[in-house]
Image 1 (cartoon, rainbow, N blue to C red):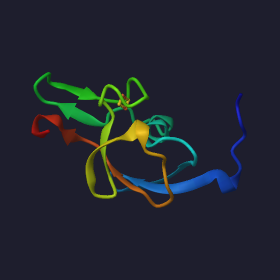
Image 2 (cartoon, rainbow, N blue to C red):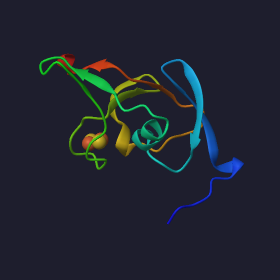
Image 3 (tube, rainbow, N blue to C red):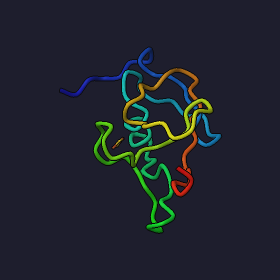
Image 4 (cartoon, rainbow, N blue to C red):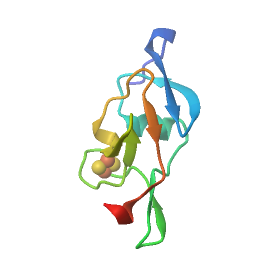
Length: 94
Ligand code: FES
């Protein structure tokens, strides 16, 4: 079912220093994908970018920094107003 988004369903977040608005009551990973952000990190050993894949907390391909906490699974965290999200982590350091 597709739901219309009213203005009260929108929350501002900051992604990589850019302020955007996204629908609330969705995961960070879904919000990023909806905003056209498909790359969330870098897998140095495999020399490739990573991004949300399973959307259920299993693959760890959606790791992002959320409000200063590194390596959070974006698909398991609900987006919140004024959340600060940074992508582009180097997974070699995990
Ligand atoms: S997309 Fe697989 S753990 Fe988040």
